[in-house]
Length: 436
Image 1 (cartoon, rainbow, N blue to C red):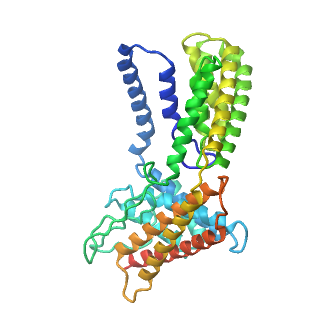
Image 2: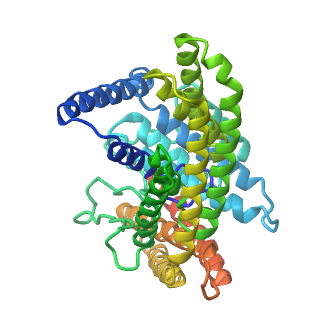
Image 3: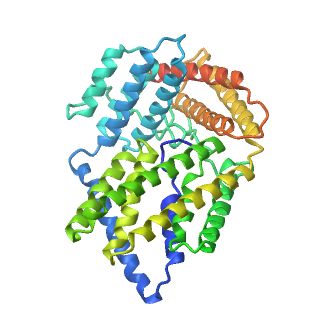
């Protein structure tokens, strides 16, 4: 669960299903039917989402590379000494990392894999004209064939794509020996000092207290309070506070909209079905753009879907939703404040040390008199990108926590700047290697 202010947390759906099942008594004989219906709905949703792949199987990879090219264009057009350069540089690095990860999912000998990897390497190298990068991005969003920047080499291996913080890296044999794999250290709940351990402790305690409090208040749907508490927890206290405000504001706007639409939705089954379908589509369209805006639509579905069973009291629904939202968010914030992260700065400093070590290893590889091996270049890039992503995440987590000693912002910014310059050199070396 990342600490992005507009990204929906990943644990909410599981929490909603578990909590709703816990607070609604069921007969054991009904469970197989419910599971079968859930699996059938999931299969239908999967088929709908995957249907475009029958026509354009590489569309996600093309879109990811197009976003990376547009981010590189924005970075190239941003003055180096301006205040917008650092955010543009981070955005370009993140878009490139996501694109590399997506391209690495294409099978090794697919013709588009090499072309997409070449486009990414050219964008990261910084040698292409921004207008050319923008033109390539437009081509990727259409149906035009991919530009082949280099002529094919007889008997040459295809570009496998430099892996980043979440890919397994190079897959072809090395020219000089066994392959050196790039193993990415994923954030683990069980790893000592992991911020995910503390985050999950906050979720567990906050959801438990929210469920107990809602039950004690006599609210008819305590699972709403549990979900409200689970949904506000982010990677640090500042983002948790912002998410709580978005949750409360979006829910109360949604309650007002539900009350306004009540005369229409109570006219018949067709109006109810059309309203649920509309707000389902609206939720998917808005949740990634603004959490509070998505909550306005989610509230409509939460209050309208129970009406399929029988017409329920509108005043009871509105009261239960308002109380559960306030209870869950208030207790979630109190738990986030009480369970403080005291090791955030230590993790940031350890991540900075890892970035410095990866940067030094890459610098030694680039400075060799002989031409570096292609697999070594990819491994160095993967290691540095992974360490850089972990540093950025650790710094963002630390910046939003309280009761912390000062974070060395200057040293972290310098390490990030030098590492991005090294990534550019590695991208240039990768691009040059493919010409041979």
